[in-house]
Image 1 (cartoon, rainbow, N blue to C red):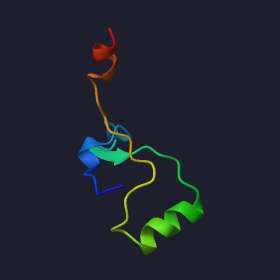
Image 2 (spheres, rainbow, N blue to C red):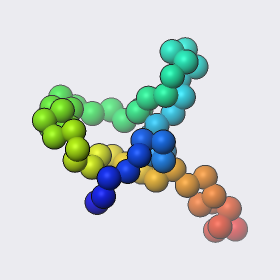
Image 3 (cartoon, rainbow, N blue to C red):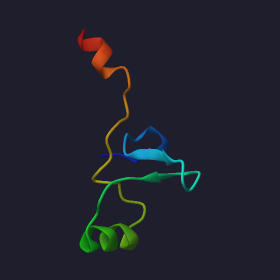
Length: 58
């Protein structure tokens, strides 16, 4: 899996309370530690945010 930008991830959403974007994936401590050790690795939770996916099925 290649590198992807957070802006394209369906888990990257706007939080109105904090007025900023953030990832809403619930990672456990082991997953978070792995990501911190190797920040250039691809996110295993990346899901391409394709808002037209449902429309194509119709």
